[in-house]
Image (cartoon, rainbow, N blue to C red):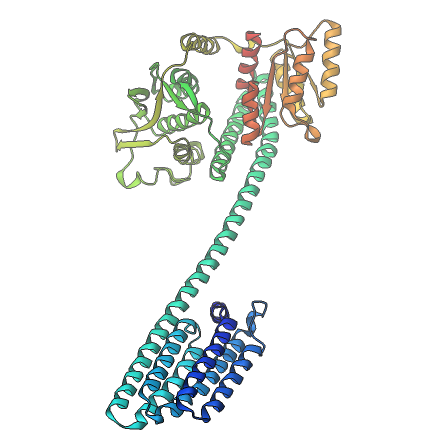
Length: 588
């Protein structure tokens, strides 16, 4: 295939000057013939001139190659042009035998100059086709060489030898140029083929990425929905059985559900990061506000393992995506607690000029040097050959590495077997924004209230839930009613508006709206929730809205963030749901 393309390109190069070369050759033959005849007065020259003009006319008017000719005919056209130029050369080869015997040295010199120049021109225009190059240069050159050598005297023998040497050099140069041209064409077509295949691969990769993104969106929603319902039913059951012996089974059920939810979140996070659908939104982040929920999340676990967990305040601010940085640190702390049997884990932040070093240190088993290069691999776990699921999936550090590259926060690790490990995340430092002190106090106060108070004491009295799935509505109503919340569930915006209208007429308005993001028939839960929130109190203070979603699409998540509506991601743990509801009810 490549050889055929090279041949076609060579033919195109030769035929590009076909008409101009033929007409130029005819004009030159007429001028040269007239000069020679005027000097030698030999009638045989007229016959030669007529024969050469007839050959040129045949070459000019015979069918020739055009770009529209199919590639499979390339060999035929290559042979045809080689035959035509050989015919012209053979007719030209006769003229030295008509001129040299006259022993007219000026005419002989002119003849040699003409033939040498013609061979030089042929070497430049015909080297794409080696048969045409040899067919044109050899007959006329050999005719001249043999005619000179036939004279037998020293001068003519010298001229014949010079002509032979020139012929050999011309053919050698032509063959070399032919080889270079062929190799360059082969390289060009191979590169074009590689570029075409690369383009196909890029297109296929883009299609696969788009399909993967669509799959992740569908999988995230469709898998989270039933898991969310199971978590709510389980939490309600656990609450109802809290004073009965069967509570242990409910607790085991919830541990399994929570583990499944964590595994689903982890695997979907890896897929979303690999698919490139996670877009960071860097902003000034107060590390103390970021450390508070981390301390709250891992404090109970550290206490259960009888470990000391210290998350030290620093007053520093960094430039990062708060959610993604939180996930990085959460994974590092989870990993530290997992591999620490005694001692503790310390989280600190150190000011290093333009950067801040966030360090997570533990006194655990450490990492051997030969294992340090593998700890960021998926599913690799130290000292867990039996794949004990209680120790996770072995994906946490691989997510840390992906987030490190995405955010541009280098991660450094140092470990001593038997002495512990520390991970350092290097984050750009920023100055605290204006009113940061008041914001810090607000954040700290809210966090302290949530940690120290009982969420149930601050729960809203009446809640309206908008969700199009029956199982979710039943599970949510069962959970909330088990915590003494008067919950009412509907499946459409119209039904929610009617429920709000009826509640207002009865003088028992709803204290909180819970709304799913994706509703039936493609309806947008965020828009619906905002409309219902504003309409609930007919122009007065809007009813608090809490959005619940299983979406992972970056565009939709960005839209939720921009709306500033509080959001929880399915599957939602009962504790997280109750805490968020209490916070909204308290802030009203």
